[in-house]
Image (cartoon, rainbow, N blue to C red):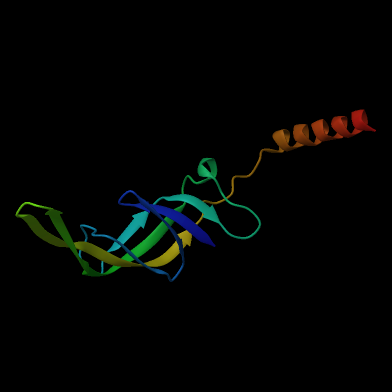
Length: 127
């Protein structure tokens, strides 16, 4: 089973046991965060937003780290304008512990009977 989660304005496709590097989270290392999935998939079909209520993705913050250093250099020819700036993104590495789907809702018997009757009528009309 996989899930698509939204963290920091970015979407990630994750499975149980995956390590994902995301923008820095405001939790301490070792803490657990519960996320709401945007989509669940696996098996024969994908579960959409209407069926996602009660679904959860549990992840643990493993460590906080800094990204690769990026240098930004501005330059304008024929003048003495040169600027050098740099930065390192603050990141967090999380591990997906579990993906829990919401339990399937049971249809009331009356509704199930009417659906079967409607299907039978369609078959009779077609044949």
